[in-house]
Length: 185
Ligand code: HEM
Image 1 (cartoon, rainbow, N blue to C red):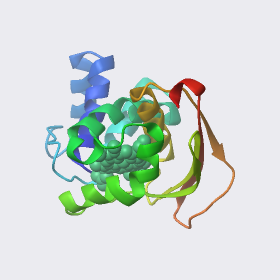
Image 2 (cartoon, rainbow, N blue to C red):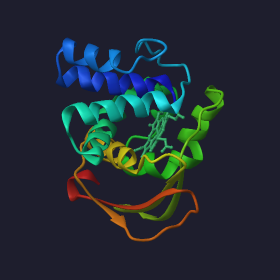
Image 3 (cartoon, rainbow, N blue to C red):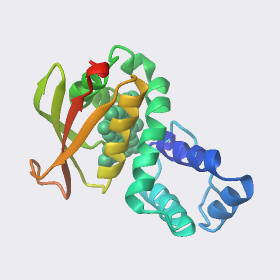
C-alpha cells in the first residue's frame, strides 16, 4: 500500500483526536517504524489494516463508516499530490471514466509493487455512470468514500447506489451507479 494512503489515515485521526490518542493508538501496535510513514514508499497492506482495525476497536465505530469517511477525507490530497496525472480530469465523471484506463495505470508506472483495484465502466452518459469495482482487498467502502470525496471536491451532489450484480470474479466486488445532481452537471 502506498505510504500516502497510510499517512492520509494518520492525518485523518489527527484531525479528529488529540496527540495522546494518536500516540497511544500507534504505540499499541508496535509497528516496525513506530508509525513514521513516507508518502512515496510502498508498505505492507497489513500496516494500514492494523491501524484502521485498532482505530475501529478503540473508538467502537462502525467499520464501514470509518472506511467511507477515510475515502472522503483522502480524495483531495491524493488527487492534488498527483496533479501531473490528474489535473486534466476536472469532474467526478471524468475521474471515474478514466480511473482504470489512465489514472491508476499512470501511477502504476511510478511505483514498483503498487496494486490497484480494477474498475470497468458499464454504462456512461453526461449525467450518470455505472462502474464496477473489484479488488483482492476488502476496500469497497473506501472506494465509495473516494467517489463521494471526488464529488464533494468538484462541488457536486450525487446519488450513489450499489447495484446488486457482480461483474468480476475477484473476492471483493461492487457495482456503483452514480447519478449527478443537476447542480453537478
Ligand atoms: C473517485 C476516484 C477514485 C476511486 C474510486 C479510487 C479507488 C481506489 C481504491 C478503492 C483503492 C484501494 C485499493 C483496493 O481497493 O484494492 C485505491 C488505491 C489507490 N488509488 Fe485510487 N481511486 C480513485 C482516485 C484516485 C486518484 C485521483 C488517485 C491519485 C492520482 C488514486 C491513487 C490511488 C493510490 C496511490 C492507491 C494505493 C494503491 C496501493 O498502494 O497499492 N486514486 N483507489
